[in-house]
Length: 243
Image (tube, rainbow, N blue to C red; front, side, top):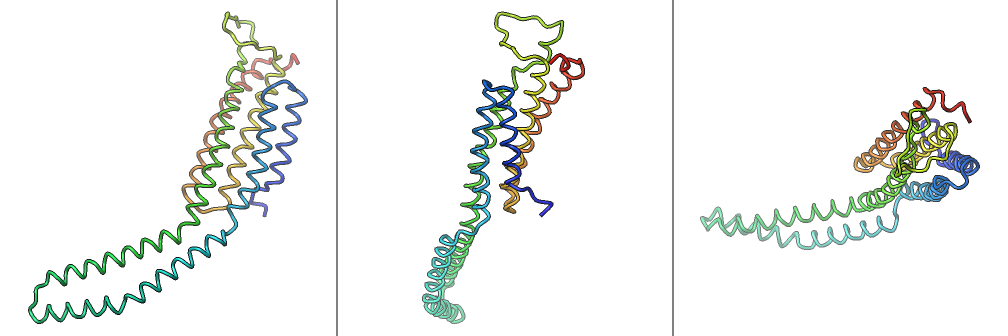
C-alpha cells in the first residue's frame, strides 16, 4: 500500500548509502556502523513481520487455560449457589448476618480473581510482543547515539580562517567538502533508523510501542537538526566548494 513503509526498499536505500560511505570514507568508523546497521535492519524486517503474526502456540495455551478455569467455575457453581441460598434463608429467619457477609465476600473475591486471571491470559500475547519489540527498539536507539558520537567532533568552524588549534584539538583531516558529505551521511543514517523503528509501529496499535517509536523519531530528528546546522554553516561560508 502506498501509505505504508516497504521494508525491502528501506534496506535497499541503506545498502546503497553504506556503499557511498565506504567508497568516500573507506577507513571511517561510520562505514562500519553502516554495515552493522544493515544487519540490524535485516533483523528488524524479520522481527516486525514476526510481531505482526499471531502466536498460535501461545493462543492455544491461553484457550486451554481459560477452558480449565471455566470448567472449575462451573463445577463449584452449584456448591456456591447452595451456600448462598442457605445463608440468605438464615438471614430471613433472623440468623446472624456475619456468616452471610463472609460468604458473599468470598464469592465476590473468587469472581474478581477469575476475571483478573482471564484478563491476564487474554493480554499475555500482547504483552509478550510488547517486550519483544521494545527490546529491539532499544537497539535502534543505541545506533542513533553511536552516530551522534561520530558527528560530535566534526566541527565546520575548524575550516574557517579564524580557527586555531590547541594541543587537545581532535585531528580533522577532512576537507570542507568531505566534512559536508560526512555530515550528510550521518543525517541519512539517522533518517533510516527512524524509518526502521516505524516498521514496528505499523504492525501494532499498542500505545506503549507507538510511544517508543515516536521517541526514537524525536531522538533522530533532534540529532539530525544538529547535523544540519553544521551542514548549513559549511555551505553558508562557501566552504564546501574547496573539494
